[in-house]
Amino acid sequence: MELEIRRTFSFLEEKNMEAGRPANEPLRRAAVVTVIKNPYASRFVQDLQPMIDASAKLGTQMATMLMKVFGQYGIQSYGKGGIVGLLGEQEHANAMLTTTFADPFRRAIGRADAWISSFTKVAPPGTAIDIPMNHKDDVYVRSHYDGMTVTVPGSPEPDEVALIFCVANRGRLNARVGGLTHEQVQARLGK
Image (cartoon, rainbow, N blue to C red):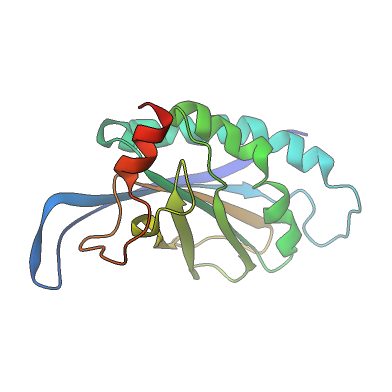
């Protein structure tokens, strides 16, 4: 199956202050979005494997886009999500957000061992979605429990799916709930 790409977007946010305290290093978050035509809009298809298989190429294209937008900042956390247009099913986004889709991002980022948080839903164009994020190497790094709210202007149309991948260069500003740290994970992994 060849997926038809209709639009792509990238968003970059830089946060320099939280609770009146300046950051020693800005929190940078980025999202890359690809909107595709949903090949299964308006019909039930039992076997979604062709969609899963096609997501590998899409993941590679989006990972390349992500590294152009964000690669220079270093990636410590990530998350993924999807919004399905009203003629599709939530399962259509889930089919394209499996490991098949995510592995090209892991390769682009370098070592990234942790499970990637995700969230999907069916919604009309312009609906916001909160993409959950966690540390790329260990989900127990509490400082990196974060997210990014993404709104895709004019998408997804009823016969589209918007796929989203988000990253951040660090944990939350002023994170102070304890637990495992980024530095501890890096030392354990020999980085």
